[in-house]
Length: 354
Ligand code: KG4
Ligand code: ZN
Image (cartoon, rainbow, N blue to C red; front, side):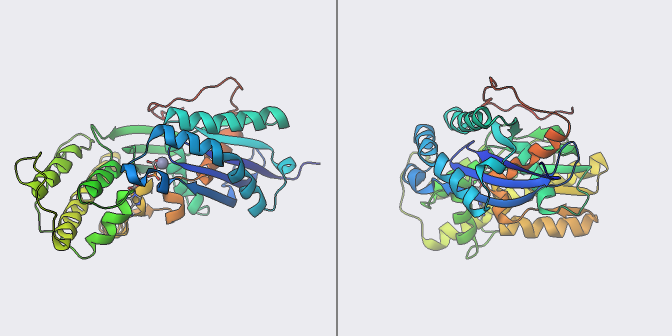
């Protein structure tokens, strides 16, 4: 006898985190914001650390090992039996092809074996929806959404949970990728974002005048590769191939603080520009870089100045996790169920207006 509550499973394997979540919301076609009963993430950081970045083949193999124990653990923590699950949602794009395939295969197997609907979720829509998930009682749309992660730095006009129009994005590196690469230049561990944030606390953000690309341009775009090169030159002089002497702890802190401030200046300014241009008064932030404390501080100050509402998820919902699959519920509410022969889409498929 079905109750009015609808319990579903989320699976996330787009990059290097294996995630499963048990979510609960109103029964479709009713709409409403799901609650997270449990969310389990098995991180692969220790596997990729020594390579200074994610190695795709290592990531897929780790997903294969971890996916079933992670699903079991999510069910256990939610005190939910598999037989109580009524749908399975999985992030099928964008991401690393081998990683995506593992999550989708697990989701298809569950869907087929238990005869329940399969919902295909866009990971970036999931990052944006984290703002609604974290603030179920607040009106999040229409808003400007900024996804700022290891693979993406993009601004969207969000008209609803699954109705986002891309306004512009990075023309080269993503902001998180720049954090990771600069951390590696500074001899810091992977992932670089939290490490740069940590050492930057002891540094002077005005010690180096690093470039702020696209800052005064009309177009909504980002570019971080010039900034990365500027950090390299600051550390090694004009000869980029020179190995040079190891920088002092103070130099590392100053470079980290100056780099972080340059990235944040651009992210904040471009978000402000997008808000003004669209005439919107709400801003939602998603993705791993949104975990950065200095960034959150600067966004809060900008929101006060502009008189806009700011939505930033808690840290656990900023970085990759399967609770982001909650965006499957608004999809299910409009009957958006995937066929069992769907494939992954590793490349960037722009969320467009429905
Ligand atoms: O969203 P996410 O977990 O995975 C992707 O979809 O890419 O984002 C990971 C990225 C990494 O580049 C990581 O260095 C960055 O988010 N990151 C941070 C912080 N925590 C994670 N960047 C800056 N400051 C942080 N505290
Ligand atoms: Zn992500």
